[in-house]
Image (cartoon, one colour):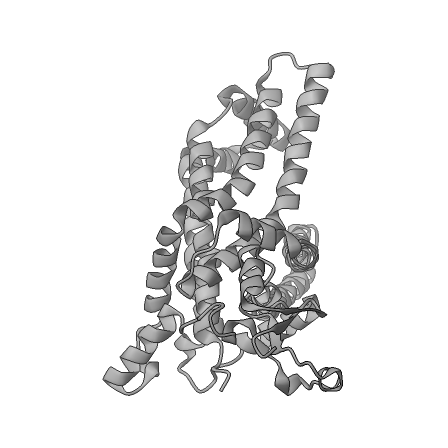
Length: 385
């Protein structure tokens, strides 16, 4: 009986199960390294009185995962033996190296996960261009069917996004610990996290959207400043600057709170609000380290690098058009005429295959962002001892 185990998944206990059964559960994605586990006991009274101290994680079950320290942690230990202090390693270098290493080791599996977002988005894009560029379009059956199809593809993308997020966490955690997992097992495990990840996506992205809308409100406040006198304009500008500082404070606070929510929700299998709580705690940890080696600042660096890459991919094919429109905006005195001119130019251009190809390329590389945060999470997580 000492070779049988009880596994706790989402608050429910399963077992007793022997090692062979646990391996089957692992291959199906039903058991992750972070799931709580304890040895089964024939004494029912002992089982009933089992304390939390008797629980460990599935990663500690001999012969199941046989997890070694992630490569990034092992590399840190090697550096510490050479220089005597882990704080002296260049910040982010190991994380970027391990991120690309994991991405290339599991490239086809990450590509399969990327297709969950690529296929619906490309279908929706092509459909919308078909409607916009069709000459003399009327609201007929063809237009309605195309519009409904494009809408369904957009909804499908939203539905599959939580599966994509959870899949990135599961696959990266396995590859980071030197293990292989089948693509179907990744999908099977990711689907089980859909309700939790979907709810957190709505909450996290919804709050960020509200913060961005606050920026639009601030721009509106500045826009009406010209309608007042000099004294009133100064008051409006001061209010707008105050709101801008408040918006920046809100963004930074919420960014730190949600930095590791995906890792705690999936890898640690924590409920939604517990995942947000632990995410904020880990982001603010490492206060004894130099600021550039703390999880919060390393995460901010990763996001900054990805944002710069994302903007470059988006702006590059549209640069000439944006420059021409900016010049027109500076010269025009009729905004309505400028809008109609822009709409006509977009319809005449049709499908921009260069922009579409760059969009697909960006989504193929997008798993790098999720991988980097998993590696950062593993590197920043304190030693259980």
